[in-house]
Length: 154
Image 1 (cartoon, rainbow, N blue to C red):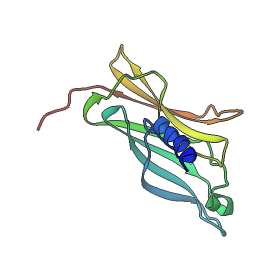
Image 2: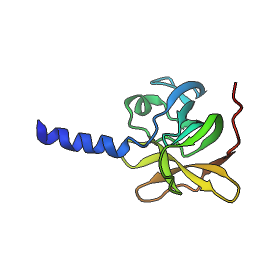
Image 3: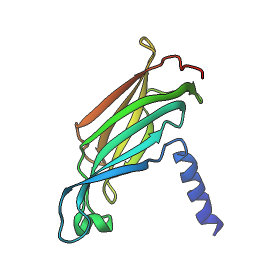
């Protein structure tokens, strides 16, 4: 039992700096006779290293029998919008290209991820969403930027 617990704890600690999405809503795009419909899912997540930033991610979710069983590969299209929702405070050092969100989009080989960059010249946080695959990724992507501004005190 202890031999199994150690890899699980190590895996969790490696992922602990990656945010998890909170489902905001979804819309059906294609009706399926068997299994769930194809959808666009809207999720929100907070940047784990930057307090005061929330990102909203919309992405395709494949339905049908395979989708219902978690065996379908989701499409690579996604859109992202990040906003300042409070005073911005860095929680540790920021690394350009650091992953802040990851979601599996196929059983094994494909994932959608969001990475962050800090444009120091313009004092702006830039977030990029893209899909990758073990062998070949997708050039489809979306980007959003947040200028770091003072937050009014109430």
